[in-house]
Length: 118
Image (cartoon, rainbow, N blue to C red; front, side):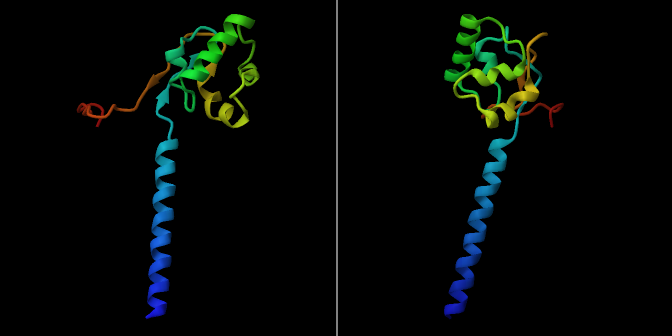
């Protein structure tokens, strides 16, 4: 009987770990497409980048207003809160020239997908 409890406990633990891992994978999925020109984008456009909230978007805009345009996308690392890990998440979505074309591809809660989106 003790062995059964032990195996049951291990099975429950494995299921919990699997659930946590699956949840993390779902939340880390990138749901945007397009590019953000960090020299011209608005705070709202910058917040569409993965891991960038309104506070950090405001810091980016303030840094740009104070110090002038970014020369390279790596200059974004000069801003407190943008380290190597965060930069790796967003580097494929940022540019220093061209138009900002970013848009969210995530369907908002309560909205249904159209037939074309399914």
